[in-house]
Length: 118
Ligand SMILES: [Zn+2]
Image (cartoon, rainbow, N blue to C red):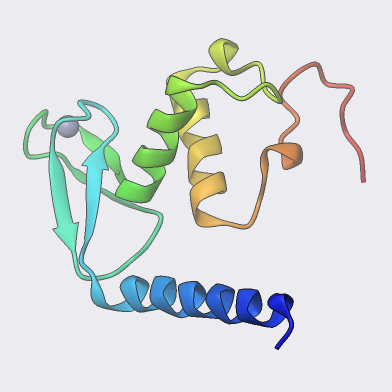
């Protein structure tokens, strides 16, 4: 059997495993104002909007996958973006798009304004 075929099988397996976690796990959402309070829900969406029981602000609660992406971007800012010049909400928006859609950093035009293509 050619090597390529076992590779394809492994890829398929990891996809199935990933999909399985999406439908069975509860999701954690974190308050974007205080970044302290978390709530869990049985459904998976990009964010919730609710009054935070901790800071009392009506806030967006972001999916944990978005927070994880945000933190990894903070830890190693992408060369494609002028990351440090973004406000926290803008950073979170980028993180949300990256984590929740099939967008990549190449889809964002926040560097100079002349990078729009296609
Ligand atoms: Zn809060």
